[in-house]
Length: 219
Image 1: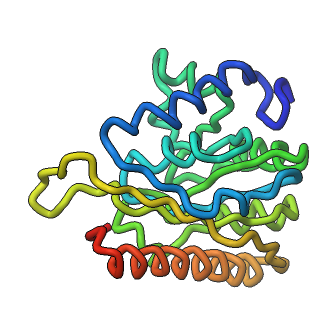
Image 2: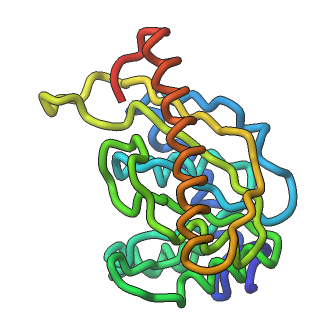
């Protein structure tokens, strides 16, 4: 590891600057509220799993976390200067729809070094209700023994009419950390994936219900 808790080749100071930028630059466009940030374990390997319904969640969660984190990001984002920047701040390119263990092994290295890795189990943007999940998160848990921290985000999607309201309310809910036991083989991986999916989906529903009760609108 070239920087504490980050993949080789990362620049710690640049990573920290990126976190500060991500934490504050969207506040002019959104009213952001974070609930349960204190639930993030202060030390040790943590795998953050989060729902994904827009391009905004990765930035919000990256900036919100109180620790350095390496997120698995679609490889298409790693082009030109932007791609070099992502690599410098410790983000990990992941090719979607392909069997590629290199990024997963890089993530395992971060976790075994006691760091934090973030992943969106749904694999792509959608409704963000975690109706389905890919196996990568469960594989990482099995390979590293990391604690899992679920994070739900709502309020980032544009309304059905495509017109975003002025400074809409965005809520980020950090769930309780847990350490699932992912068994061997494909069966263990499938069962572990369903456990992670269920925990994250339940957290998203909890946030949806709370937003509805408090009049903060749709996802």
